[in-house]
Length: 132
Image (cartoon, rainbow, N blue to C red; front, side):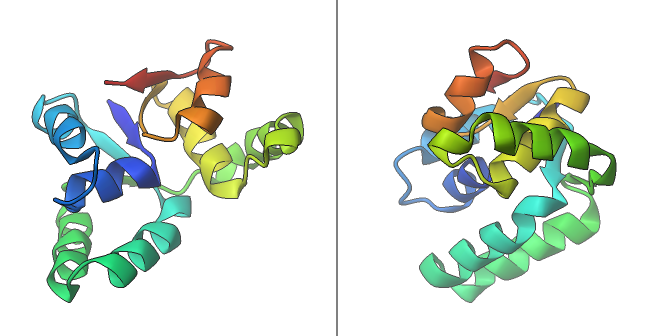
């Protein structure tokens, strides 16, 4: 089970992304299910719309509809999101990253992200593991 951060989703979808090959390797390694916290959807869709052809957004939304990813609303995670946001306010850990971390902690701890600045700090505390 792997929780996906926005950077992981974008790297997977964007063939020009520096980390595309790494993201493909993780998602093709059958480490699923792959969890998409609903808190990242606005950010992911915005980035797709701004940087990729419309067909990519349509395919991503169809995959969400068809169950290629498991969506997790994480309303029970809000206390942890607030705690993380306060704990890491000096490095501006925002809502989206905190929501991914809280979801991952609850869902096995594995996160596909290429944001090592924010996620690396939390991973050093041992509550999540960054894949690959």
